[in-house]
Length: 125
Length: 125
Length: 125
Length: 125
Image (cartoon, rainbow over all chains, first blue to last red):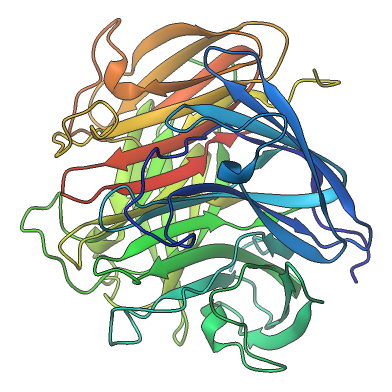
């Protein structure tokens, strides 16, 4: 699609926190922390996430695939293997891929009746 | 205006989602997802956006012009040709231009009675 | 203070919009669009902002100083000379300085009873 | 863990403001301004923060350690030595480390009944 695929193969998100509660009923309105991943290349991306904590050894890697020319919005709430990411706990993450990807971090917080949103492109070097 | 124009010719926004509903009546308060584009150069910019999905082939390119020394805040809600961007669906986008531009991503979410905002400079490499 | 000053001399903010109304009475709670500027160097920074619009020629430059080892949070609402930045209108901006600075873009929106916030580091190349 | 540690040794956050009030009772819901720091390396990071103001000489350095393979979400509210960071005052900060780290800036504002959130990766050069 493009001359060379856009993105980098290593990213970091220094902020992570899954609110322990929500006011919404639906999946759409449940508080969540998301790593939005774009793989604009023509090859499937094998991605692994490592999660860092304040007082414990890192968890993971959590492995999954983002197919060629697809996006995947990964909720940290959904990471289960090797173990769920705890709620109400500070964490950070490193995302690695075998093809260039773009990573953006978003949180929807619905602990109170009105939702709050935040987003940033993740760090890459 | 400047010695050399500020910006890059290829950008990516890994997060995209048009909320399916709004509480506001006006265009100003309707939930929207925006790519804010600045063309600070002295040449018109021919811009094309390709939209990526989780389970479908990419859509686009959506083509438009940002005149020299102008900004254009493009709402994904308004992209119609070749086909509208679906609401309530995860997407991502790549923005390409023939002159350097700067791209910032903003969402206003008015699904609930109080609005929520988020923004980030898009990724470029 | 530091071996070499942190920052860049040219920045862009592609998103700009001063909400036309506020619910708060105080300056603190009035809707505002801010360019937060850090000058961590040992020399005063002479800064100029040029504002770009969708349908008009750019305005400015707006000129001011950020003293050495100081920060200044500039509200676009307060820019008056050569002319005020209109409310309720899309704009973008380029910030130039004669010494390295760091620029971060923040909006507080209090059009509705609860405030909304967004921020991003500006673009530099 | 990784071939070479991800991150940089010098970062800046140009926006800083600790809201002077909160509506929440808990530490979780108290208005706060945070520097989220990830040290994904195998060596402890000795970190120092310098805080810049609009009308006063910089404060600090505030010194602390982020252990190897850990994250630490530092609240500016909690910085006490050499002196507390004042509330309701504009500030900015520079974060320096002896090993590569990643820094992300987040604010939770609970001055009104519903919280507002914002985040961005800090600036590094």
